[in-house]
Amino acid sequence: MDNGNRLVFAEPCGVYLTGGITGTILEGSGIFQTALSTASSVYGVEVWNAPGTVIRKNKIYNLFAPSGNAIELSTIEGILYGGASGVSMTVSIYNN
Image (cartoon, rainbow, N blue to C red; front, side, top):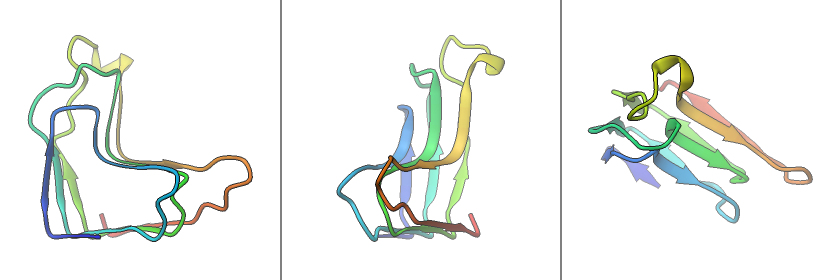
């Protein structure tokens, strides 16, 4: 659980949750980038196969286009989530 932290990152993702993690709460944090990434995509929060995740009351900002890529060739998303076949995936996202 995260509550009220500043999560500063320069690589492609500020918070990454993946398989085997359940019931995580990410709340009240500031998530932002300080430098360009070398990756083709940038995400503030990325969640894969992490059921029961709650993402609320966060401020996600200053996400930059990856270094060397034109903005139209880049993917920039505040929150990205997904599941896999056969995995029950429930994510609650609100007030971010």
